[in-house]
Image: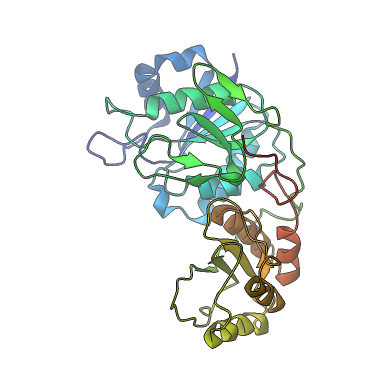
Length: 335
């Protein structure tokens, strides 16, 4: 049988019925899991580790590096990996792991639930069964298995706080559709891996994130910021008639802060050449984030900044497709 390592990092799935995080010993968690979901024993030989156990809203960069390192060290001993994770920041972890483990050559499946496994009405049981099933299939992808889909990690975002279909990949068709059978996309596992070799030893997420709204005033990025991420309107438009915005962008350029522009719209992306306002943003040094989700953009920035990269390196990163992330001229179409 395939050997699968299940890494429990916290989140709703393993919570006690009271809603409190359970105190997890790996052996006990595995026994309880097999007791409640006995069909897992028919799919794989499971081992369990608990690298950390906390609400995903409290995730720090070092947690992701620890998780990636553990998976890489265990790659020779297991056929695939399942990561139990809280839903709040699962899309960010999936984006980061999608880059850090792009060359692993084995499936890494993130999953969780909207209600604890201990509840009668819970999505945890089906999610963990589907995740283990996918991890057994030798498809070299890092993705989120939730509800009826498996989504590429560097393309995913959280959709709902309560629906069992909680995630989507707005600009890329799912890796798999899950029903009575698992229907894999023919391109699943097939993408060029081009993550620069010097990345991943450190992360720097001192990114000043801005989501504009009409009438908003613009002030300088805080001291200590290493980059700026702007979630602009539509295809990358900003109110360029505002003097304070022009001062803001000029200050970023003077301080050599990379400024990446993504869209507030979940579908489609930024094309700064499409409108006059976008062209003005680009003239002041902004970098188009294209089809990157907010989480994938943050992950890319964190990796480049962690390697002490500057404006030029960020520009190169967002002009490149590292690990199958949606790209203006490189992604497969939506289904």
